[in-house]
Length: 380
Image (cartoon, rainbow, N blue to C red; front, side, top):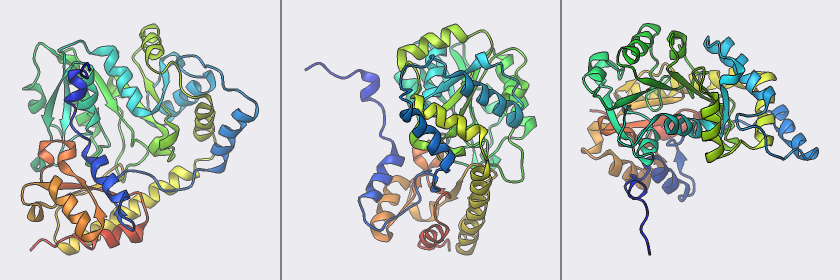
């Protein structure tokens, strides 16, 4: 038999899925390894999706999405993120992951280098490898609060560097860039003539700080902004989001979209319209829940003397378990699950700098969260 493509064979396993599926196989386990919002979907969103089936509107849509949804996304990013994007620049995508793939596959040639954060979400590197590009990790160090440093990134730029990936609020870190740092990062990209792909999945959830979109500082059309309704409205399974492109790329992006998913599911698109234009109670209540869970989890970790990064955004806590992991956090989380029936995402799922750290999902039931964290070994 012929072999699989080398880039497919060489993809590392997703350690988040690995530990989570192990937890799902254990009845009664407390799952803190997966960022899955746990609230019921608002009825008006469900009704909008059902109505599409009732009227049998299940044909193809334009590649970039139905006009009413593109307009709703354009208004959302204008009012919430300060991005003045014409509707023609809005591409409706099958979740943020497909949006990232759409951007990368439009920008990267074979052998191009793409700068990705370490620690950072694993599919940044996985997707670029599938496209025969070379992910180059820029470090986010504990001593700097896991914030990027311009000098560290600049030192990695070569003649083959083409794209800089930014992620704020950060998954897995819960870190949020300041406006000043965001502007400096866009200026760095301008200075070296790089594209910017900005992953803003968690833009709706920040705590006492402002989320600042890099596109606010984009004066020459180099920033792609990726948004999703998966986290904002708890619609992870609907696979719906938007990629906001720089101006002038509409024709090219539509062709790339046609060659991948053609268009997003029609029921999901109309459900997304209802989410964006209807009552926003879900978002407010979810934000309050995540903040309260963050505070409750922080109190447990404080009592145990466990160091962690104070989350300013998203719905994760990044905690230092190096006193317990013995230099192999991936093996430790599996042992902890086996012994204490609690799953945590190993920091190495997000890069080498994550060794000794774990990501704790804050989006579920508060009692289960504090019960699970109460089983962690104290730092002595």
